[in-house]
Length: 284
Image (cartoon, rainbow, N blue to C red; front, side, top):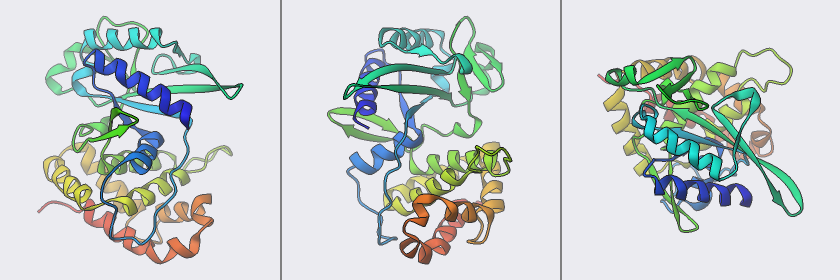
């Protein structure tokens, strides 16, 4: 993972230099929180889950950034200067470059996602679902991610070798992963894992949450309980992760990481289901 960390730090410093916020999500966000985060460990679960490796960087742009032509032109200039080129099959929200690691070529891919623009700013952007970009910008889009509406809530500032990386909160990570699982759980193509790794990430995130994470989650829920994206994620949790026999936990048990240590994890599945019910309960 060293080459990913090195390039993430370089990218983060460039964003900081242009006053453009970089928010890290995805597998690398989970990895950095697990490996570099200096926070109190969960007292609710007597074990730690291993950090899952990843091959790309998921970068979230705020609602304010995606509506700013000036900010996105700065992002484009940073990508060009650091040697990133557009991924042809994913124009223009994925970019990649080749780096040499121990004599071998490795690819680093950046996926750009965005919180949805505020209603009053929609006139500033062009939306061709799922792509969104500021009007007047060419050769750059972000993947409009409606469930990232609260992406700036509870951000963690994590020191990674002297560079402060902003990582999405565990609660936002759960929201994103629940939506991702829902999108994949019914896939029928042979290459799909039908959401197994998303289900495992949900399990792993819950068992790592500490008291501060729970407090942030409850504040997030209270602030956004009536928003459409939150109503939708509550529905997904209720349909797929309500109890240990629902499809989400069935997929989670099929994940290879879970299967390597079922004796440790099995006794805690119902507790995880209970925690999810608590986190996504309705506000009354």
